[in-house]
Image (cartoon, rainbow, N blue to C red; front, top):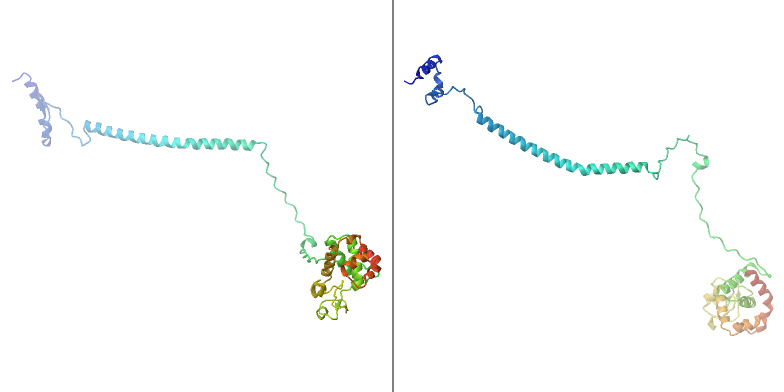
Length: 282
């Protein structure tokens, strides 16, 4: 027997008897020496399992920290332009609020006691009546004329002025109408059509009608045209302008050149009155 056997035996005697269900632990020996008995542990009780579990948890925590750090870095990167913009806006607003060019807001108007409206203010505005065109002022008769004669004389002068005829032409036309119709718009008893038109009396000299007793058969115009004073005066002025040298003729000579009357000297008697009438109308 080995010299140490006595000691082993003594130790074996002093050790309590092993449990029946722990046979596996009593059988583990290295050489002749028995390993000290190890307490039973669960799945995570072994040191290797604890090291592996700690290592896994550490890795997970590292990944989480790295991910959280990345998110925080991106959030901070996104907030940097926003923060700069807010700072710039604040600086701009601050400068604007201190600018001397900034218009001051008007102070609120103090309430004024309500005044009672005047009767004229509460009354509805009267509607304006349409202004009627003023009636043409009838010229005042001169040189012994009636109002009807003066009205016809005005038509003769107005037409001549519109044609830019000289004053002498106006006197010639006036003296002619005074001799031919005594400044009345005459119809003709031999021309029934003229009697149906507005007129101021009638004559009976061939087919002569109107202020200048012009004849439709001679080409002066239609009966209806010659019975209108303005048309008859215009026809006379046009014919006078076609007479060569009429300006150097006498009033009676110029009238006769246009009318070709059987009584050429009759126009001269009206020259003075015709001059007065034209002067009153121009």
